[in-house]
Length: 321
Ligand code: TXA
Ligand code: MG
Image (cartoon, rainbow, N blue to C red; front, side, top):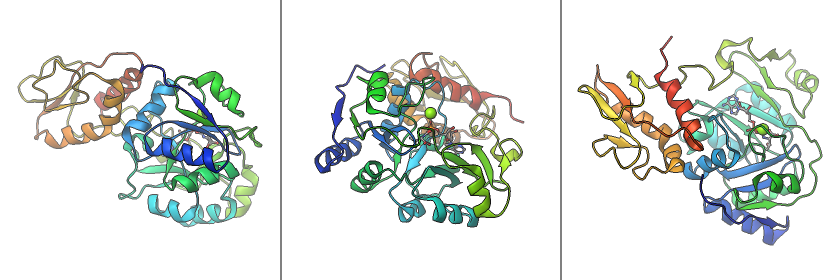
């Protein structure tokens, strides 16, 4: 765990939002109100900033995050919209609705945001403070709910401070959230599917698209993204806890002892740096491995962000189906 940072409370006026946008530009973490719950925001293009979200929340897994945007024009630069997604965005954005849509290859998002998926969860919030912050920052903001992992979602700035003081740089105090439950999440892989019930009732969504929503699990393609054992595994076989490479192995190191590693997740043994590099390095080491070679991965300590890193590495090493 990194050392404590001072957490400032910002006002939702021009001065406060300019400061909040500066924090985001500098890779800092800023909690802000939306109409559903407070989000814990970071620049979605900044690997280190996104890694720090997982550290601050103490999340044991890199589950994908929702990307918050000021409007549909910016959304189109990040993802492609199937026809029904387009219709729902048109009807319910800004609002408590999240759409999981195909990621554009030129999106510029950190792969940590999507947990390596080729889809991304997008939302245009309606709350005026969220909207003004996103407009001032003028970039995509990744934000899960602003609570420590396993705790209830915060609907007031005080709740955010109770859970995350010393772990985030700022919270914008916009008072109480109106909706109080998270956004409804809809996916489109294999037909429109309810991935999470939330602030926007399913009835109005079904009426808008003129068909019933499938339940999560009915469409094989989107069942529990990131939870499939061998999801986004490298092409080459993977061996974990490798303190040295065997012949016919390429070595992905962690820490100062891995001098001969082809790539190192963090030469200094910094877990935030390792998390920020994780998806990039897995891809790069897979490209380095010749046919028949195995990827050997150095041990990563099982504490703090190391737990989420090891969860991901175990999936990469799991037998392929
Ligand atoms: O109201 C909300 O949605 C709040 C505010 C802050 O916007 N955010 C929120 O984020 O609840 P979070 O991280 O707590 O929940 C994100 C959910 C997760 O359950 C995740 O699995 C799903 O969104 N998700 C994100 N990206 C996805 C993807 N590519 N495919 C499927 N599900 C995805
Ligand atoms: Mg949450």
